[in-house]
Length: 220
Image 1 (cartoon, rainbow, N blue to C red):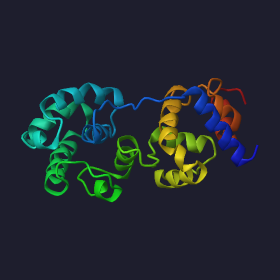
Image 2 (cartoon, helix red, strand yellow):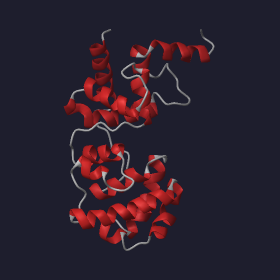
Image 3 (cartoon, rainbow, N blue to C red):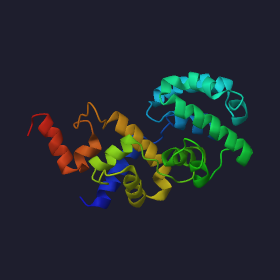
Image 4 (tube, helix red, strand yellow):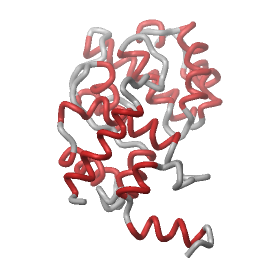
């Protein structure tokens, strides 16, 4: 199977499994999505979705957010981890949105990346999911799958993103990155991985990854 045939197989399988994909983080607008994505760093989406309603009940826009102190924000978001950095980021970016962007989240990658505690992945998620602009945010699931499928060398998420953008059609990026996240969680996790149910990896997977899997299982 050629590389292009493998890419086609992966995309067709993902389309069959996930014709529609829900966005994992609950939100109602670009601002609440931005905050939710920021909170999701080193925290599960499930936990973020339990914490954001508590935060957004007090402040679901930058004007109300800066009425809270950094300490008040930190107390609410503590279960998400990294709360000192995240609370300062949330307060700081809210102030910048008011001062520079009329209280609106900018539809611009560079402007998003200038905000405190907002990295490239967070900005990419907002551009993709809030504004529908083609982007390919790479999380741990996508990074793992791209390596397992021999679509990227696994050396960095930056390289994985470049490879994904080169391999997959731009008009598919926004749906595809969500499909990959769900597939990684359900069929190809880092722990408790069962190759027998991992349809895509079992067909197109990197030989060394598959051999290592069987070796650990004592089958080779």
